[in-house]
Length: 304
Image (cartoon, rainbow, N blue to C red):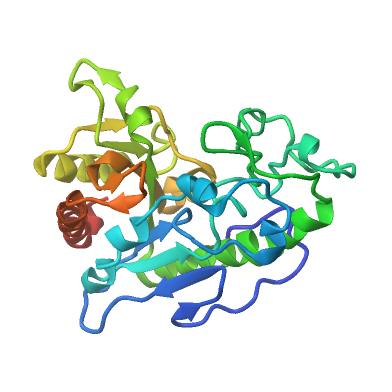
């Protein structure tokens, strides 16, 4: 089982059995846990903003951190007890967005001309949210100067590539051991986004959004299982709106090859004070709910 990046020119570095680097952290299943093909990932919970980035920014770190999926790594932290491998990011999302194609860059942010393979005309780039975000918070420009393309290349080498090398290998290991791999990519969404969802079933608002690329990224049984378990826990769950899954779900999800990828977006208001970025009492309850879902996946993955 292989997944390849058409822009890669070098061989990825070997993956250690545990631990990680500044770019990522891996936690393997606990001793005695059941063997499963499950991988939980959190690409937006990183908190590292290197000095060379901070030299160029025109806003405070607190504002940039509002784009993070705060505490999502903590929400999934108990998953190894159920036989799940967990991969979390090290670098902050504003440094480099790991849920984007690495070449999704805004030409207006750079002082030099970008090469032809750069994807500079996507909707995300237009919104200021490419692989290197132009905007933060309520639309404030992050940088006080133009960047150089060499800086983007350096961020790809130090952040995006190591993280996705690790994820590719974890998926390959799971597939080799079990004949399949199941990736759950965990995110959080602003409560304002959660409130935009209106459905006949739930009315206005939701707690969770399951993004399976409208069925293209995973078997329908996986989406149904997750939806059933979350609704049994009392959560309002919708599919593919306003988020259908990002780069990770689209790139890795290959259900015909028994590689399944599902994105889960959680309303931050369930566990976070969005003004202070501090957790609320809801964090403990949500951690317990995620643990129950994890146990259900560990018990039911063979039915996917």
